[in-house]
Amino acid sequence: MRIRSLWLVGLLLLPLPSVAQSGWVDMKGKPVPETDSAKSREGFSATLVITPDQDWRQKWDTPPETIPRFSEADEVGADGELFILTFLSNPKVDSTSGMTDVACDFVILRPDGSYSTRERDLPCFAVKLQGDPRNVYLSTAALKYVAEHTDPRGEWSVSVTVKDRLRGVEIPLTASFVVR
Image (tube, rainbow, N blue to C red; front, side, top):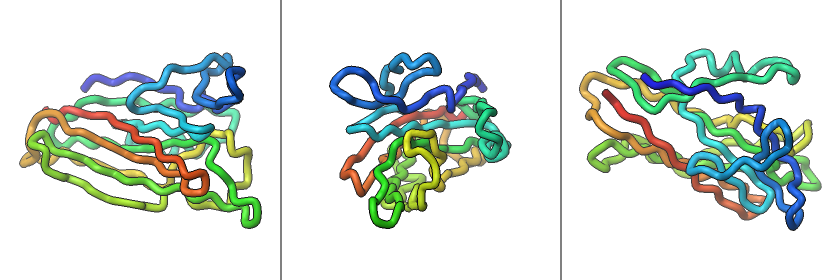
């Protein structure tokens, strides 16, 4: 399994100087180029991470001064596990209730194009926001994939559409992994 490290909270949502837009920036405030799995639209940002880290929840649930480090994986062997996580920043907050309203569509396609998962409009960040909306937040919807011996080998496609309903913005994210 090829694994890369990702310092997720190293990506922060801060205002960018050009036309008052916002987007993912690194710890030095430099804009991070968009990828298929990390995008921003109208000030709202989302990132899709596929990790083999079984302790992803413990890594996330740390004090604010601790920057969680996640491994990213693009392949998995039989009986291996992957966790599909989405992170977001700057959801619109309802001025009356203080609530956010972010939903996610999850689609996982097998190598033959058939659906493994097809979930629409899952609430993935509908909370009364206590902190700065520009902080990085973990979605409340996460998927676990276990590579069964009977699963088809080859490339599996993951699509997550993160929808800030209050802002009227959708961010389509894609990634993939290979089952060996």
